Length: 341
Ligand SMILES: Cc1ncc(COP(=O)(O)O)c(C=O)c1O
Image (cartoon, rainbow, N blue to C red; front, side, top):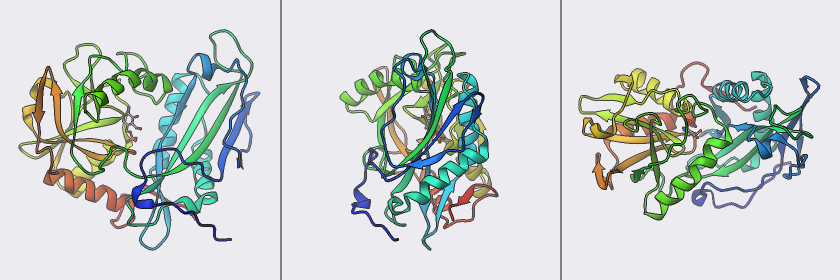
């Protein structure tokens, strides 16, 4: 049966839309069950669940894309599986076998195929896998049971305007501690970011930039995205720190910059008072794709990179190549694309 949905694909933002099916699998007595698709989008769990009280939970975000010839493909789901397992290890939650993670994503996409936006609309199907500690519990300790679930929503651009430069402001708050959980994708990091985000938005910025928590001199993250800058001598530079979430988009762009655009690539310290070294800058992530950074406000001054209205030429090339690979218009490096058949 060919189902259809009545959505204005070109106008989608980044918000929740209930789709038809999600995947659930439970861990109990040392093992995951086989998992299945369900239609209910409500999660019923014990009031003592560690996910509710102690933040024992993690999540992922990846996308399914419709190609020109109507196929559907996932972008690097193995990398999300690996990152989710590193989050699980950090929070003492059971890991998900990589094949189970990818199979769950494929099942969800297939079951919700009619929600995968058509090619050429700029929209895609966002998948949200998560693991939460559940079961009866009271003290601070790992949960006795876990839920692994994957749901999906069709989405458009994360930042309003899509591929339009936006401004960011440097936050006085930290999103992570030096030996904390910044390098894994756990809910507590995001709870801590809500207030600085709100304050930045109220002041007219798209989001805030977080500096390294120990010295507050180096760029770490751009909201829920990684930072990159293009130097005057055409190098792709991105910050390196254990408290940055290792962005799959960022590592993909590093490969694209080197192998497709012939650029030099550097992962190293990026000092907030040395922004002059960059002629272009961007925020990158699954949701943000590449969002060009118009300017960064720091200590009351706005540092503008390429332009506040125009997208720089290298940022444009990086974006076009990344999106072409995701949409199947450009040959992908080995193993990057998983077709949903
Ligand atoms: C804090 C943070 N940094 C960076 C990213 C970008 O990572 P990715 O490219 O894997 O989506 C995300 C989104 O997952 C994020 O939440």
